[in-house]
Image 1 (cartoon, rainbow, N blue to C red):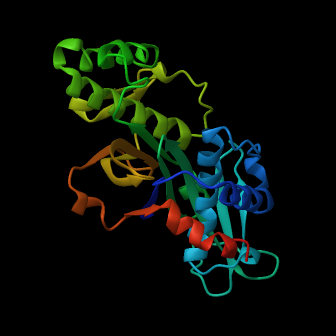
Image 2 (cartoon, helix red, strand yellow):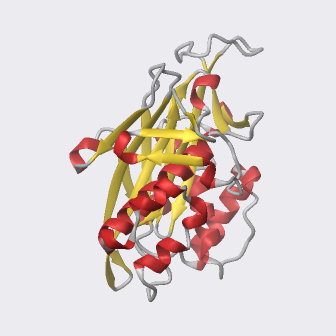
Length: 291
């Protein structure tokens, strides 16, 4: 199946004001009731959740599709997708709704880590677009006063014995951190693509990066496409200049006889399908997202 992938990455170049938080929370409560994000301005995590759930609204607004022409749906395994009703869109799912108008399906998934929020989306038949996921992991230790090796050890329960050999201390801090974040981003993307909760045992998955292969419960996982890239974020947050780096990964089931890893190493490699925006750009259009 030839379903193109598109990604939007939003950088939080600043925190929201009280008024902006109130406005965005109201928008998600009205337009994205399934999100059920609690009103808690003092908890920074809720602002990330709110913004993430607003990205599909922004995407549909960008496509010039009014709210009355689409709705958020949920598959049997809890995967969200958008059903767009239109009179002139391609008959991509070979189905007609009761009004006789065609339906376009957009599968999507949301993720965030620290100051980067991402959404991956694809369009096609419902069964072809729902198995998509995105993983984001900042290339930094947390809390910042611990060593890279201690940080890596805190994730050993999510790794297989083979994967642990990729992050051995003797590899050096930079290599260990990069490899660890890569493994975690890939696992997060796959787990979300299949609709599993984050309580899923991550160690059931094994990514053999040198061999470009992946197994689940020791069984090869075929038919998947994994895209991997690094997002370098630079700018100001308030009066402070920041430079942050994030490991990003997408998992998408294409149903092919093999599994494919695509390593996007240069910014130019992702320019055609990854778009970067910041909080200011989102805030500017919030009043229009409910139209």
